[in-house]
Image (cartoon, rainbow, N blue to C red; front, side, top):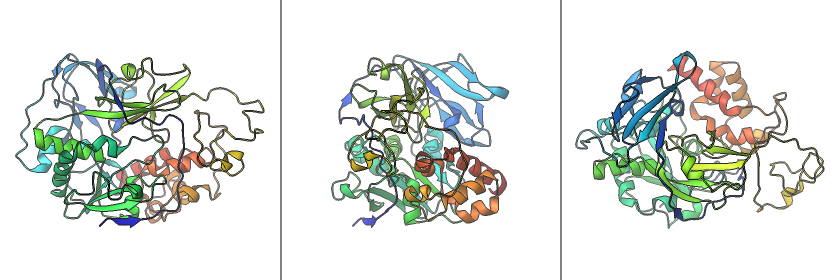
Length: 446
């Protein structure tokens, strides 16, 4: 029987543009990219050069300091460009895909960890503390998998995984071999008894009420088995568990994924099947209702602005398109004097508080500049950890390692502070502050 978890704090952002549960066709992209920026704290060392041909699963670069972790091509084709930034930092490796894919030969009969490393699927396994690609030299005390995503307009994992139960079971069996502890899976309370995860073996199933950030694996770790200094846990997205399982069932690496195209500016929000790292050009072509929009790989809280010609992020299962907020709101109907029927806010100051089920069309306008960072109680309303969020952020800003450790830095990741960032009247970039703090911890304490 599943164990129930309850959280009282959080906030659901009800936005327009939820996808219908249909999978629509889309023409394959001719271009794909692998972006080192998707993997914090990883220093890439190129394995191939421009002009070389690659197969699905061919290593493109590896971690300079952990060479066994390979970052491989999701398609077969030709490496046409290695984009570099300042100090020759690699920004993107762009591959022009073949019309028909060829695959690297895989041997899945070896040790589980070695198979996953050689396949290029290891980067899908992340660790806490630090929220980076997992250290294969460590044995985690547990592995956590969130069985749903509670973020705005998120894809429905039950819909995406309903036909992949065998792959899920194989994936969980592989994960169980790499920990001496348990493999925890958490699903929404509403899915109890009907979830694709219900009858799977080798996992400990929990249910949780669904107010965001209930779907964040960090929230689930904190409520089930908090991380202490010196401990390590691994996390894997449920969709990627099925990907790992498929490797052991078929002997092939499959980087295809069904993603949700969402947002108020999408004419018909729906699901589309494409390949990790794909250019968004074909995906969004003739599907957007206006011109001045932002293309986000991911959701509105933690996704990246990649542009119409950008590429799908390695970990992203969603693309969101919303209006740009680059116009001044000076009229009575739009500005701060407006009654706020159409204003999404956690504050009770607007009349939208009387319409709890209303969905909103939001843009990217911050409605102000950065202000003094004070204790206001806003963060605590949406932050379900037993941690003082403002004090932790201030410790991270000042690089105070002792305070960061005492205040819970080992438990958190930037995404855990996304709602804090949303409700913050000080306009503080909380997620980047936490990322910088984790970098300090990694360099000084790990």
